[in-house]
Length: 358
Image (cartoon, rainbow, N blue to C red):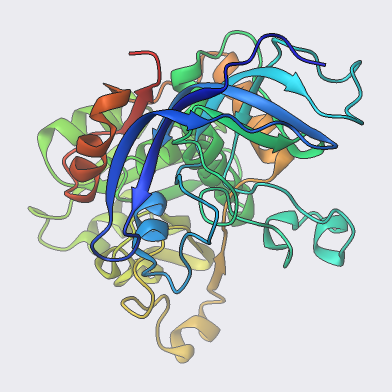
């Protein structure tokens, strides 16, 4: 069943994928028809993420696959058509829904059944193996589509699909509890400032590491108890040790550079956990240190990819309560290519959101 759906829509298409890719905005891109078990979503917004750039460039060792023209995995919009086999009691035309980094999972393997669905070997990444949110009309499996609750505007829901849920999942993976210290290198960045908010909302004591008065003011306003400026600090580690009285219980590395990982484990107290979230270009970074130090201090280093279904639902509920307010810069659809360029140049504060109808 469906309402009136146009034959064509808008799409920001990746052309000449690879290191010399570019993006072309089209307004005559064919609208797909939902197959069995699928929803057709009309996205109102898409967030922009550096992962999009890596998939378009293919410099993570995997890139956009044949048949996938659009990157993106931070979509928010509404259901406009149901494919055969979709339970009309569960999904209705007009329901709000989002598109997230994982397009689907098998739902049957040990990882899926054991709460680690984001590492399912059969899980396709949105924007690489399935059409991404730079496309106004996209298909999404009904069983793995995330609902957007009332009270969460599209421009906030979009970024939560990725950076919000990703940092929330990483904080859970750290094992840190309310009242414990969490250090967030890159706390003033697009992903980092989300981690600051979620950690504060979860009752953790947050220290953001970044540089500049603007980022300091933003991080403090978002809930950071302390801010360490890596550009002016005589010794970042010493400052962290002093503030926390022995080191952080957890470090969440959100920066996607080798620099972000350098010495991050040394900010922990004994039995602390470092969670790797930021993904630099493959082969350009190293997470960890001397096994002697790791063993004697019982340091744990874990990886956390993105948020699963439950993580996204829970992350959105924080926003519905007014606890998460991403710093957002908005752009029109035609400005999307320029916005992606600014993103690659690290010239966007917070998250970037593109409106399809502006």
